[in-house]
Image (tube, rainbow, N blue to C red; front, side):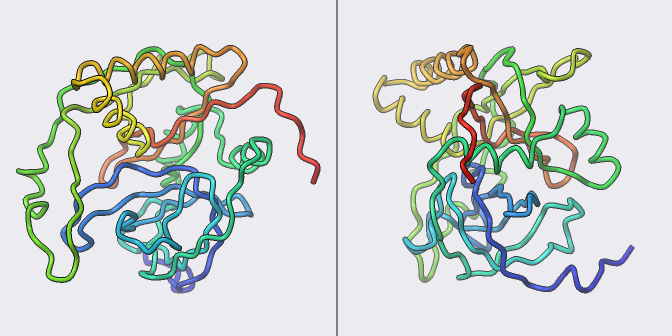
Length: 263
């Protein structure tokens, strides 16, 4: 089925950043960061390719920042949230600091459970959503791919840009969980690919001296966050580009008794 031509037009969109995957090597963009966002109207977006670490300071967005993007529906990606970003179009607008306001925006992307996301993926290619979850386990498994073999261009020099170091983690982080709002949920296991968790691991390794020690510290912190009875736990999930394997790009721990917004 051919795409609606009007849907392929470039447009400007104000987007709140709600998740950033860890950078991956790219043949054409040096490296890219897949980014999750939500518009003021509640539309959930997947934005890429974005060489975030190589952008000018005025374009380097963080979590919970509003930014303006010029975007186009990616005609080669059937997932309905996937949009391309025009080079040089990103403008940082403001940061949302209040957790009540953050959650009022985030909850527009909340789905009842992962099982509903599975059904919607089969129905209309829904491939991004937020789900309330309960942690079962957080672990590390041997990584399936080696960038040095699968992406040899990571070693190639660039004519105009100095490459920044980009390290692949020695393992994959895996989070096992159950959907909080579905008593019939049998459990799910997903890769945790969020940027902040990769950086936390690297920082802990520098502080505690080894991969094993660093991961253990991170594991304890993740478990402690989920164990906090004062908070609800949510995960931002998205599918792989080629198959319906759901990954977790961000975790949110939200106070149960947030004050209401004043506007």
